[in-house]
Amino acid sequence: MKIPMSSPDVSQSEIDAVVAVLRTPQLSMGPQIEAFEAEMARLAGVQNAVGVNSGTAGLHLAVIASGLGEDDWVVTTPFSFVASANCLLYERALPVFVDVDESTGNIDPARVEEAVSAIRRGRKNASTFLPRSHRRKKLRPSRLRALLPVDVFGQPAEMDQLREIARANKLVVIEDACEALGSSYKGRPAGGLGDVGVFAYYPNKQMTTGEGGALVTGRVEWADLARSLRNQGRAPGATWLEHVRLGYNYRLDELSAALGVAQARRLEDLIDRRHRVAMWYTQRLAGLERVRPPQIASTTTRISWFVYVVRILPPANRVEVARRLLQREIPTRNYFSPIHLQPFYVERFGYRRRDFPVTELLGEQSLALPFSSVMTEGQVDAVCRELKAAVGEG
Ligand SMILES: *Cc1c(COP(=O)(O)O)cnc(C)c1O
Picture 1 (cartoon, rainbow, N blue to C red):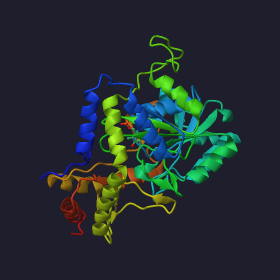
Picture 2: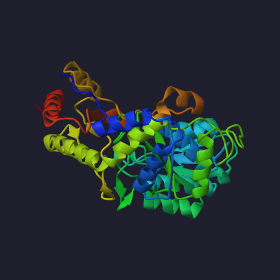
Picture 3: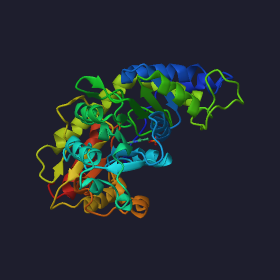
């Protein structure tokens, strides 16, 4: 039997919740989105949540709410899903990539500090932190406006250090927590660690709304702005055809929100089940020389597992291993494929191989194994057996 890469975990309570919405006349902008937002604010430990129709939409609104625009520079990570950098390009802001920590894959605060201080102090090497396409232009230190860390694979970024750099340099912190719903950093919930955070609910995430996302923030003005922007730029309480700013249709419909509310109420259980599956993997992969299991940082006081990503170490070869597993009907994913080497970024910004060596190393060695809350111990056994054979440690 083929093992799926990921699976949503939908129970009768979710089916009932969605069907109940279908029996009402209100399929968008009703009570479900409000209930959903209350759940998400609670999970992030902040006052405000704004539901939207994807994580990418949430990131876009977070960028606008942070006041970022044309030629503003944002220090962020190339080891991520492409949306965390694309959201800056939507507003013509510039991603300034810095490399990541090898053990977690999260943005390295030491390199962030290096880049920020070089740019802010106008040091001679400052332009080396910019993409090649921008190195000949005049350095404008005041354009550096924000940090955008990503909580990679469910582990919160090193937020205390990043916030300290942000505070000292008056930078906004946007937390891409799309992979970290339910995780904690030093006891504080992911999503609420920066000035604004974003969650996502695509079907492979810890919980799903089908498509969906949410912006979470302690700043009520930012939440109000995001609410207006998701709804075609209407002011709160304005009539249907009154638009006070350029907005979008990023609304989350009531069916999706109801699914989200029911999933959020089961989230603890979903996270526990995912944890159990992760531990089955970790037990079976312990002691291998060519497979490195995920490393959990001491600052991650609770990990809500999003994916189970191992590193395939030499002499084993990731491409070969993935091919052999697929022959045995076991799907895997190369996770992540570095953003700076995506064809569009190479063309637009002139990035090259070796620009971010740690990101590239992780990009070449990382392999996401099949993972979900509904995976059985027998399935994990089968994957691990084939993986051991594929790396020559069978
Ligand atoms: C899932 C994810 C997003 C958002 O994805 P959508 O498909 O737009 O919901 C953003 N950033 C990261 C790191 C993600 O994993």
